[in-house]
Length: 246
Image 1 (cartoon, rainbow, N blue to C red):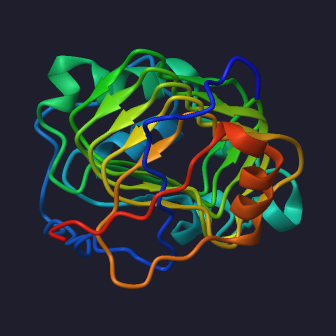
Image 2: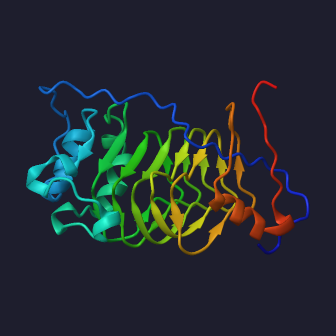
């Protein structure tokens, strides 16, 4: 960590095994999306939109047509018919026509493959974003992203770098459930509640310089992964436990 003052005004608190998000309630089977998918979208992108739009999880693992249950952590890859393009993920949470009608559970995608880097730099999200059991071949850039809603990359394989530089999330960030990352950057990020990386692995570098996480919980703890990162940071990181309401 270079260029860090000896005393940083930050709060770091990593709370594990804590997920207070409400269970997702599926929309009725007869529900239909009021905004048809774009004709330029692939069949799998239309599949995702038609479910996300009405509050359902877009889960490729539950669809026999997409090969059923497939784990990128075990297989190292996912079929081509699960590929979602960068332009598609850019559009549904950011384009006003689309994000304004996304149902309350937000964008929840299971078992998808992203061959291009996910680029949500400087984006402002109004909906939850969950990528579970996915393959992000070239990583993701969420630098300077702002959101009042939770973000989760869970049980996924992330190549290259997950860049969360100066990310600002008022709620929770979940990078857990045995996810595998190459490099993770959380430099200058602010997370309003919980950062959970329990069970996950980072094969390369994890940079927590000036990370600020505020969490209210009864039994906070840190994983070995974070202790290692904090130790390697030397005097550049101060760890303060803060309990809300005390």
